[in-house]
Image 1: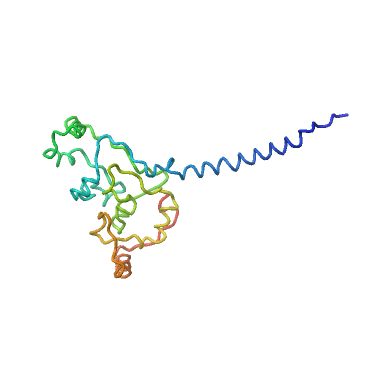
Image 2 (image 1 turned 30 degrees about the horizontal axis):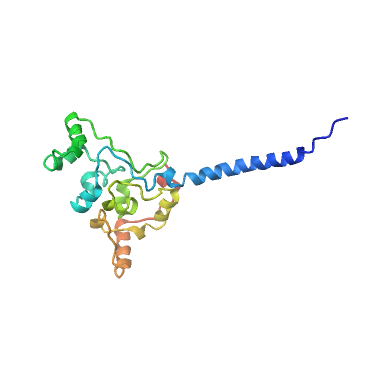
Length: 217
């Protein structure tokens, strides 16, 4: 005759099943929550760059257009980073002996590009085309925030799929005239915005693109 199970067997089984369910459900839930936090997305975290480049000075004080440094933003999927000769176009004469610009001069004389750190990083399975947005009325500020107020560039949006879809469902809410694409702090006149919004949507041939293949190719 078999011996009966010990008294702790039934409670132990219930605890074991409960822990297993908690692990199976809780761990994925925690991971899904963690990847949406700023710690994982990099949101609001300025990166230390190889050069102390202050966007406030260049954009706000000197009024340098975004496209001067990010020259391929209107014709390529990537906005592009400035080659050293673009920097030296100004700094060959301005602050050409400043210690802060020693890495620029070293890059210029050695021919090695400056090792800028990427701020906005998308997964490999996400396709983003800067030109498609900029040439269809979406301003730099919409995604990158007020860079004219940043000493160091930081990611202002979480870059989640939900954030992208919130714009893709109705892109007309974010449209700008062509001459205001790179303007910081631009806001439409509420009195004329409905008519301007309709005209821009027509001129840019704006569509609501929410198919998976729009971004996942």
